[in-house]
Amino acid sequence: MAELIDELKNIQLAIFDLDGVVYRGNSLVPNADKVINELKKLSIKVVFNSNNSTATRETYVERLKDFNIKSKITDFYTSASIASSEITRIKKEANIYVIGETGLKQELTALGHKIISHPANYTTIDFVVVGLDREFNYNKLAIAQRCILEGKAKFYATNADATLPVANGLKPGAGSMVNALAICIDNEPIRIFGKPEPFGIELILRDTNTPPEKVCIFGDRLNTDILAGNRANITTLAVLTGVTTREMIESLKNEVNNSKSPNTNLLPDLIINNLTEIFKNFQG
Image 1 (cartoon, rainbow, N blue to C red):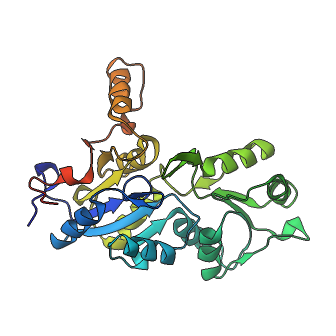
Image 2 (spheres, rainbow, N blue to C red):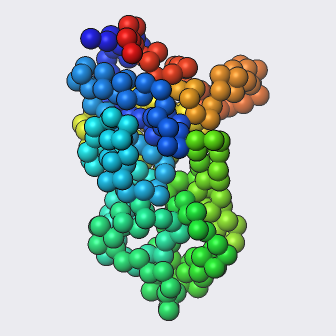
C-alpha cells in the first residue's frame, strides 16, 4: 500500500479542485484516478470543490466515472451547490434571475426556487445570481442590471475566476460576467460563494466534522484554491498540472521576501509537480 509523505501523514480529508487538477477539458490529468483511489484505500475521505457552476453534480459523478473515479453526488461541493444552499438559508422559494448554465439553475430549482428568465416586473426578482454563462450576451446583462437597479434584487455570484482551463489552454471564466454586472450597477456582489472565499471549505469541514489540521486541498490556482485553503487554515498543495507554474510561485516568494507583496496567503504549504508526489512509494 502506498505511504503518504510526512507532511500529509495526519490527513483524514482531501479536497480536490477539478479543472486543472483531476482533468483538463476532456483529458484526465495523468495518474489522478490512481492517486484518488490510493487515498481511499488509506481511509482518507475525498471530496471535490469546484468553482465551475455550469454542470450538475450528477454530471460530475458521471464524468469522473468515465475517468475510473468512483464518487457520489454528496462528494461534490460546486460553487453552484454552495450558492444554492446559502440562498435558501437567506430566503426560501425565491424568484431568481440567473446568468448561468444548467448546473446553477438545477441546483436552485432543486431547492424550491423559481428561475425567471424574462421578468415582466423587475420588482418581483429577489436575487440575481451570476455564474459562468457561455451564452452570455448584452440582453442578459441589461435584464440583470434592471432587476437590481429598478427592482432592488440582491446580487450574488458563484465565483469570480478570470479564466477557465480547457484541454488546449484557457477561456474566459465567470469573473468576466460578474465584473460586467458589477460595473454597470456600480456595486460588487454581496457575496461570492466560490474560492477564494473560504465559505465552501468551511461548509465541507462542518459537513464531514473534520478539524482543519486534518484536511488538505489540492489546487492549481494560487488566487482561488490556495488562498481559500489558507483562509480556512487547512494544508494547501499547489499542483503544477494546471495554470500555476513553479516560476510563478518563486516570483511571488521573492516579492514577499523583499516586502514588495503582502500576499503570503497566496503561497502554498507544499508544491508538487503532479499528484503522485504525495506518496513516498507510488507504483503507478
